[in-house]
Amino acid sequence: MDNLQVIERFASIAGAVHDAVLACSTDHRAPDALKEQLGELAQRADEVKQMAERPEGLEAEDPALLFAGIDTLKSIADRATQIGDEADGLDGALCDRIHEMQSEIAHFRRQLHGHEMRREARPAIGG
Image (cartoon, rainbow, N blue to C red; front, side, top):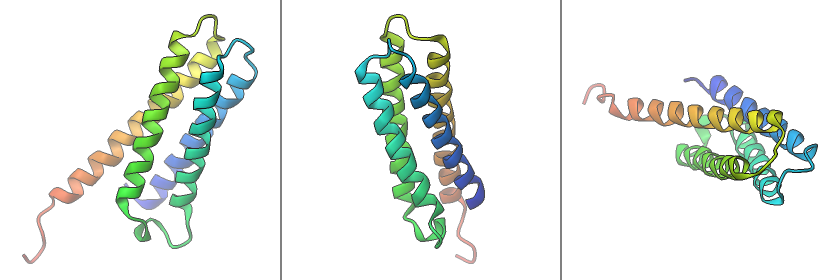
């Protein structure tokens, strides 16, 4: 996965999170705990996206920071999804947005961690 793909995925995740925040803000039945989780998730998604978009590029970033960022997003998204699943009477569109967002984050996390594992498993050249 190249740097542009990583940046695009973080941007897509940030967009999905903001879509869920917007859907949540229009559903008067959404519990405050869900609004809080989605608000925190939006803030963290923007932070990770900005880290990935820095002019010096992803090479200058410690990969552990990006992995920690996506792990944090996944953890918060999982909590938001659980709260949404347990809430009564949520709008179907909001539930869909939350599940789509959580799925996108989980899928990218698996890709990112899988890519790093494959990269680390490569034998050293000339070693």
